[in-house]
Amino acid sequence: MGYTLCLFALVFLQALVVRTLWVIPIFGIREGAELSEKRGLQAGRALRLFVFLGSGGHTGEMLRLLDNYRTALLRPGTQLYVGFSDEASLRKFQTTVGANLSGVEVQFLRFSKAREVGASWLASTRSVAFSFVQSLWCLTWLKWQFVGQQHLVLLNGPGTCCIIASWLKMLEIVTLTRSKIVYVESLARTDTLSLSGKLLYPLVDEFVVQWDELYERYDRARCYGILV
Amino acid sequence: MGSTVVVTCGATVPFPELIAALLDKQVLDTLLRMHYTRLIVQYGRGYTSKFAQLLGCVRAHVEEPADNGASNLAAGVEVQVRGHYQSLEVCGFEFTGAIHELLRDNADLVISHAGTGSIVDALRLGKRLLVVANTSLMDNHQLQIARKFESRGHLQSAAAQPKALIAALRRVEAAPQVPLPNGYNSSFERLLMDVAQS
Image (cartoon, rainbow over all chains, first blue to last red):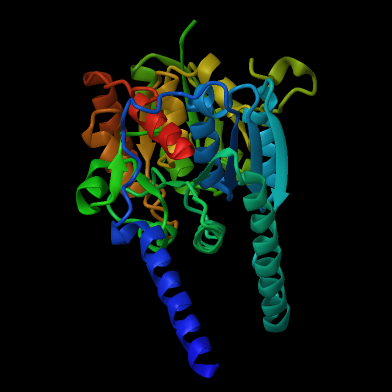
């Protein structure tokens, strides 16, 4: 009995390792998305898109990105999920891209900030733990919305994106689905990656930089010039 | 109608060094020689009295702002300090949410901090651009950004000193500016769609 259980656990563990290696792009086992004509635009199918707005510059770049690629990303029928953690970013969304949408349903997901400036050690620990659990719950719900739907996750540099991408990858491993995360590094990073960029480089499905110097330095990176 | 320079320090962080360098007698004289007739400055929150004081230092005639709408700029921006340096009209205010409209409707030349948002905004509007990196900020890479865009001919950059500003203004006048292409790239769009459909 014990022996069978052991064997079972071993097989399961092996399967998990294989699955992890398969899913994490840096190991290069699974083919990346090919830039091919074969799929083409599936006009009939609606897209479910998640973006995260961080703060200040990151929010500005994400909003520009949405605006520049609105014909593909914000077609009528699209379901847009907007993650945010500060009110200023939410207002900025509503006065720019959000004010100019037709046929796109928008749903806001509030991610609590990990830490308020000046909070005590105890309060910080509690709020970090709370924000972590709350984020994971939010993302698991989001993942559920994506099941069986054409979807995409678009992230840039804010710190919360590390939690978002890691958890979505985690769910990809255990649920046998695809995470479909595209990360676009900030235009402000000219020759080194941001901390978020460094952490997410091995993890996300497509990693895009906006300057040639970064493109030359990182094998997995794609570069299409300035996108924002 | 003469030409207008719009100066912006960025919305979130003050940049008093830029304002101090700008309101230098020689810099203002250079602007006059380049036939600019109006200087509009977003100087940042909490710097109204400092701005008025600097204007006084160059013996500009500072007016009390009028209570009626007469002192407002076209884009609905309320001027808080107005003065005249010879034939150059100087309008200053703390902050506006309508900076994009102000640049679009009024600016012939933009002088800005070297934040990517401000740079891309001005260049996409097709404005001549001079940037000054705010080097007092930690970890925001303004100097690298300014150099990168300058090396591609999109803008001129200068340090926050009168002499450097004057030299950069002359370069703006002398050299043509390379336009920034828009952010749309069909290959990137295809990548997004390929990932979504994978």
